[in-house]
Image (cartoon, rainbow over all chains, first blue to last red):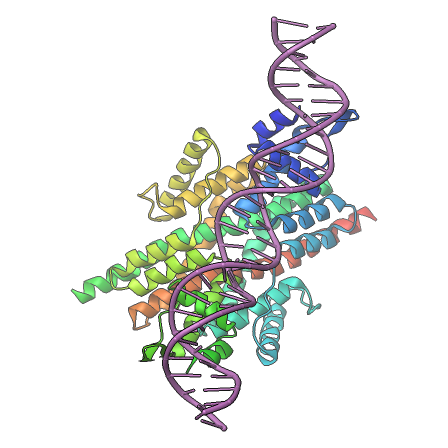
Length: 215
Length: 215
DNA sequence: CCGTTTTGGAAAGTTAGACTATCCATGCTG
DNA sequence: CAGCATGGATAGTCTAACTTTCCAAAACGG
């Protein structure tokens, strides 16, 4: 198919697709003449994936580019590529002073130890992100959360097993990595929205009970 | 304290604080003379909260403003205010065509029914966001997820109970709402990072097993 | 075959968000 | 009382993600 149709199917304006091509987010089409190209279903999928990661996952175009590059590279060790993809979609925040960060890191390592999670490399972006989040939570003055870290860890642990189920049994390595990325990014959002709905349920029950006490 | 000190304690440049004041995100300081003001610890906290919601939660300044307005308004029905706060921090995406969205909505209502979640108002932003996410997942070509919706729902349900624990027993209503917001936004990030660590554990186990098969 | 669309590609322009800088008249401080 | 800080207003900056505009070479329709 050509530009117009690609744009139509992907639901993205032609100019934007040209822009993605320029930035290397979408591979060039197959040449039919020196200045003419043809695109396939892969291009449609690729563009939809970009939009999903940006619109739902909230990733920046640059981050999407890095993640896709990792997905495309997909010939190295699967576990490492997955880590690479995770790095791309994880943005840490440098929060807290030296002391706070040291405490947070210790807390994280401790937690990881209890759950048998890998936590060797202190510079792992996921670890760094966690450290930042813990510092922020403390700074913002809500210590309560930290007492429940283990409870949340258990939930995360169960989620991960569920996530891996989605990958096990898929043949192509490249496909596995793509699924992992989508699952991680969109899954985050899916989970948090489900959590919100469930919170509505829980808060309604709690506050309704309170209101009865009040009146 | 005065500007310089506030800026110091909050870790944000003076010019930025002035900007937040202009935008009404931070309440004006207490006047000591027609063109001089004094700030308190509340201001420091408020600014840290703004930064946390933006940097960790990824909310836009405008969204933060709406959420804080809801927090400040906090004199109406707690449950409704909580919903308001949730609206602020939930950004839906208009994805999918008429048909897909109808299917997604039915799926969501079905799921909510099974879990006793409130789902009366189709226009609830959380519902809309969920519909968008389901459409996107389908469009991006990963149907697998949908079979596991219930499993994820169970996890979300348990998380919500845990979340509510953090609120129960807190005295001030305004404080409750603030906690709920922080818990929801920062908690989302905390959970997703824990999930990533756990995924590393799970994927390592899975791919290590595969590698043995390969070699 | 020929006039009108389309296309690929490059370059410049646009828009929104989140600051940042500059002024200035007043106020506080050593 | 000299000089730096402050509140307040206005204008400027910077980045990300597009859009627009051009152009010459296909492509298509009659």
